[in-house]
Image 1 (cartoon, protein in one colour):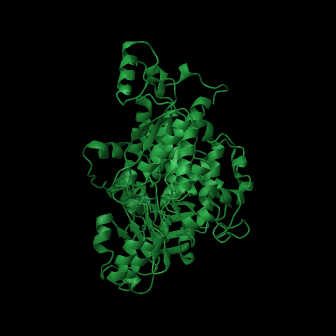
Image 2: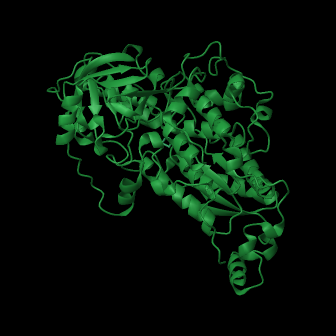
Image 3: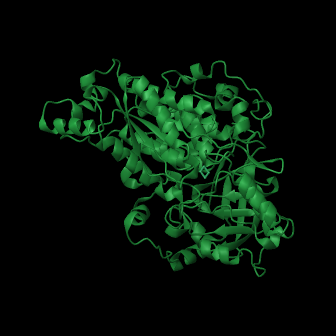
Length: 577
Ligand code: FES
């Protein structure tokens, strides 16, 4: 952050528009092609609005209107707004997984901001991977920017019951598979579960990422909790546009905000909201891009002792609308302020402590006080052991308690196709004590580490009334999911990690309290299997999938590309305009 305000001539966009030469003539005349006067853009902060909208990302259907709100804010503060559409990552409809394209979006954002005459940015995200995607790119470019969270959709409804995105789908799908829910009811749920624009309204990855961005201080305080279709959301968007212009003049950059202390805050908030396990991967990638080392040990240390305060599905009972009306994220952070670094700078120019002044909780069942949490342990535990030498994670609050210390025989599926073909077979040799193992679903093996980690409970067990079993994979799981699912096992099976060596009948031990995950097979036997092991055939021969497989790092490193690491703002600016 510079101590003095910027001058017009020092605006980045001035290099394109300012000089009296042939190139700048071209830049000005072609901008005037839009019917503008030179006074409307020359010498003004040019604010790029990164809009992750398309009609296949149904969570972002309100973004075209929000862009107008943001533009209104930019103009009212004396800036020049330009909309820059970027790849939209629709979690539901992109295959094999939107996660594979997070780094694609990050690269696109970084290069849009670099190659055009942009002074500052408003980053629009919400649906799961869009938030880390836009932030990763913006951090690496390190221009002044503010994040506008898309907000969650309205609550789901079915026959007087509140439905939570994802969470209740899994629940009723299991009922349908076991023949307890008829077709008509299933179709009614389909009509009632997604009632408006906005992201999933359980504590899934979308709300998790919006909330922890808010906790990092890169959005206006409390912005993450505003429902997508509430008029407060329009006002927040417009204020964010205004603020983007001020950030340029004050030269406040992402690295001024995204400090070690800010990441500590966001990890603690991740625990207190019972956030998605995906949050760990994205936070790790974001921290590393910001030049801050964050590994699973540090993550585990910071998160110890933080209770779960947000009583929101899947770990709790309510949905995001309730959370907003109970006071939202600011009120939750106020409850735990003794655990937070209150001196961190946030994007509105104030400290976190200043932002939390006066925040109140209006419903103590939805946002619990520290002395009456939903659970005394926060949302996620990091595991280590012979089955996961580089780590794995589990969300204990979403699992049946009896399974958090468990030993059982492995039932192994070599990939997702094998799982789909056999999981509901009557021939499957499985009991309530079995440990289901899915191999080759990691960053390289998936590819893209799809959300296959909530392996379905075999029909044979569902018919016996068993709803949860221990499941282990190198995949991820939707934040709206639940169950005793050990995820992100690293190194992954497709790279020869121990997970790829597990065979049917092997004993596996999970002990969440001791943070252990062990494969109880003698090392000599594992060595024999290691020598016999052959890597799976990977399908990507060319294009982006090829880049992904060749360059993605492992889950415990954030699944970023090796060539995107580096110091923020380090890659050279264009030097000829
Ligand atoms: Fe977009 Fe869940 S599908 S947030």
